Image (tube, rainbow, N blue to C red):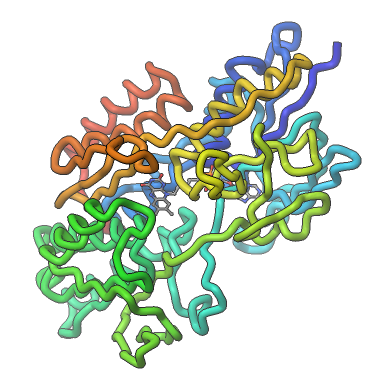
Length: 436
Ligand SMILES: Cc1cc2nc3c(=O)[nH]c(=O)nc-3n(C[C@H](O)[C@H](O)[C@H](O)COP(=O)(O)OP(=O)(O)OC[C@H]3O[C@@H](n4cnc5c(N)ncnc54)[C@H](O)[C@@H]3O)c2cc1C
């Protein structure tokens, strides 16, 4: 019997969990035992859980210590890894194409490749959406990928160090456009990083750093409960973050951000975290029906509309929750649950069994303001009286559990325990901020 091949494109919060789960359930490298061949494709060689990127940007997390090699993970979980960026799809021939892999000097490391599939899962995440705002592409940082977060980190560090180590006594103004979870968490993390820089001898870092959050809506954290948003607003104000709500941005320039009312904010660095869209290359793929934000429209079993062999999950999938008639948001919790669902659903499909329907269970939302505070609402906010507000240590622990549950889905119990131990040891003898 020929083994069927399941190809998963995108090894992020959802895709890597799915590849590891399917690899353990159906995959493996012994042909006679394996029910299917599981192949993961990613444009990067290593995985870093995306909700950590604001910490990479601030330098409070060392991306080199927390990354996971796809090749090694595949070996231990029973999937194969293909390093490359998907750039084409031929649904009639059940084939994806991968672009040539080129190094920084322009040398071709791997030629363009074709990869056939029996079942395909698209889990390619999302990128920032600037809604055509002038100057954003040229002058704003984004922190949607590890490379972008590291670029911001370098620029932030250089700006801090220059002010401390030379006679330049100007403020370091960071303007964050977008008061969602990413924006507020980044603001707190930058404040924390500057405090540590001060302790480590970059004198004046804490005093010179000005962080402003600009949010078009009337309050921060539009998708979260009012109580969490109010608590977050107060905690950020207490640590000196300037918050401008009810203000859109009309343009960004090299050293400034202009608001719709004409106010010009000085900006040594500006960060765009105000909107998301699915990766634009999906628009060029034939046979996919895309909806709002360029996301792939999927049905009850996360099957792409009109394509029985193609599935999508996470940020790039547009799934309408039948209980609210609204699309599920771009959140790690959604990607995680959809990966768990597809782990079972794809096995059922391979065995010719009927496909189940995906049901999202809302467990709540959490916001972490670095070492300062954390807030959250646990339970299903869509049902009245079904949520509990938490803060302080309980919220900080619950937030950490999010990452641990991702590690558990990827590495299992032993791997997660080993990772927790090494994190503890590292924290004891490593710098709290990466200064290189
Ligand atoms: C700074 C930040 C903080 C966040 N904090 C939270 C939080 O606290 N809680 C929460 O629920 N959510 C949070 N999110 C959102 C969360 O990270 C995403 O919803 C989640 O990662 C989506 O998972 P995914 O699997 O759909 O995509 P991703 O995790 O983004 O993974 C996509 C993968 O696809 C790969 N890829 C993309 N294009 C291609 C291609 N053409 N070919 C091959 N590979 C490709 C990428 O390299 C990546 O590995 C945060 C996001 C950011 C940026």
